[in-house]
Amino acid sequence: MRKASYRKGLVFLLAGAFSLGPAFGQQIVMSAIDYPPYTIPAPSGGTVGGLASEIAVEAGRAAGIDVRVEIVPMARAGRYIAERKHQALLGLVDWVAAENLEPEAIDILNLGFVFYYKKSRFPAGLAYTALEELRPYRIGNIRGSSTVGILEGAGLTLQLYTDLAQAFRNLDADRVDAVVGGDLSGQLIIRQLFPEKLALFSNTREAFYARKVSIILRKEDAALITGFREGLRLIVKNGTYQAIVGKYCPPGTSPQELIPQEFINVSD
Image (tube, rainbow, N blue to C red; front, top):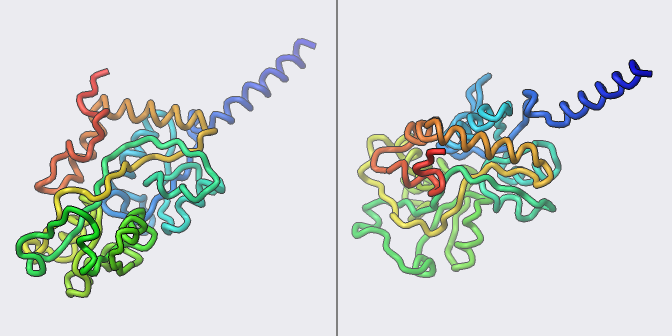
């Protein structure tokens, strides 16, 4: 009788352990889109890199969660977590708005969307007080971006592309007047595509749309939520988080602009 009780107890103990999953080293898959420098597609046989990806992986590692980031099309990003094909999503909580899902968003970075332009097109700079003032111009943007609805609602003429590099090539060729991009992503792409033309481009300083890059989870996945929150706290406290941000911060941009206020001067 005692032996049977021991076996029964062991079964429940093991079942509980495996239900915790990540705490016991189980790997989870986190969806992301191709959006350098936040998420950078992996080279053949490699792992997904980038600012947001590294933060998510390190936060998971600090909490004993083995994170594998996988690049997916924008149209599937919200669907994969809603359908449980992946356990998490790295990006904007807006992406799951159309899904039958109650998400929990753990914010990790500030993200502001600005307009990039050629100085020859706007010698005095691209200035506006309301988006409607930009109606005379052709604006390049990414298909499926959270900003599309906002700009279309303001009556702007949009040219939509499948990737940001394509939009910037058309900006360089004067096929559009400006391009919407993240405050880091646009700078990075210009440096990569046109290193000899850096002085020819500029961007608006104030973001017309400000969001947070987040680790997005299903609310019922309480163990994962607790784990990522604790892991993020740990890497902020030990300086790993700040080191990652500093590595990806381009010249002229302060790391403080990218770090949510609650992570600044964390000491306990």
